[in-house]
Image (cartoon, rainbow, N blue to C red; front, side, top):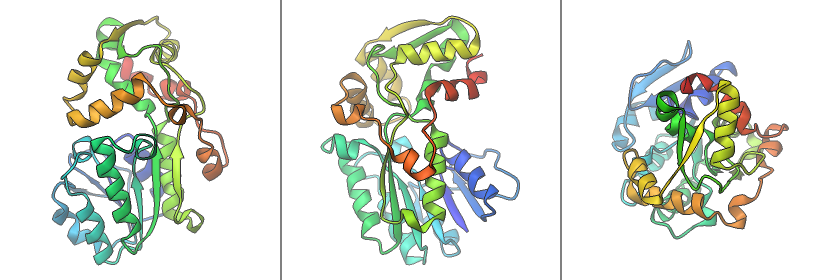
Amino acid sequence: MIVVTGATGNVGRPLTRALAKAGEEVLAVSRHKAPVPDGVRRLAADLAEPAALQPVLAGAKALFLLLSGDLHGPGTGPAETVTRAAAAGVRRVVLLSTQGVATRPYGPTRIAMRALEETVRESGMEWSILRPGGFASNALWWAPAVRAERVVAAPFADVGVPVIDPWDIAEVAAACLLEDRHLGGVYELTGPEVITPRQQAQAIAAALGSPLRVHDLTRDEAKAAMTRNMPAELADDTLDILGAPSDAELRISPAVQQVLTRPARPFADWAARNVAAFR
């Protein structure tokens, strides 16, 4: 059995489907109830309370570990889930980390994630670590304003980064969970192109067949919106990257191609696939 945490999110949903399609027994773990593929069991549990996973870890061969935004800060304790998994006999763990561990190692949330990476490495389990940059699905934050006013409200509208499709992250995660050749791998994951919020808005408009206006938020406005769903430290770390990406954060990583033997999907593919969210 493979335990997938964050199983109803943008990465967890396609990962759960991919593993089930591969014939694996999957347990989908999430805080809230949501549909799962046929044949997949689900468990309502919160990684803020690691003991809730204890009954299922003993029967698992692998664990995909994804933290919700509120667990990225210091002192949140997700390392206990790793140590419990190792003690329960789980053989393999794949951690969804973040590119910022390498590119901005001194932000508070990056320090906490780097410590979790070390816990994974020292756990005694087989492991792989995924470090994605920005997610294409972050554009869903714009959906309410697009539906209501045909407006994309974003900070740093003309500053781009190579955002990655969560489906690509999920497929890389599935490969790491199922294939021994990825053991000990640390994969930085990006999309195939540097793309600005304004260009993302154009891709969404093309998918909709309707023009969109771009409203450039101030940093403070963006932070106020982001902190409704994540700690202030994580919002600041994210906005630092979005506003002034480093050369390392602008680099197009070859990792998706290396793992999946195909190019990473462009943002326009994600927009076309998710256009219903913006109608």
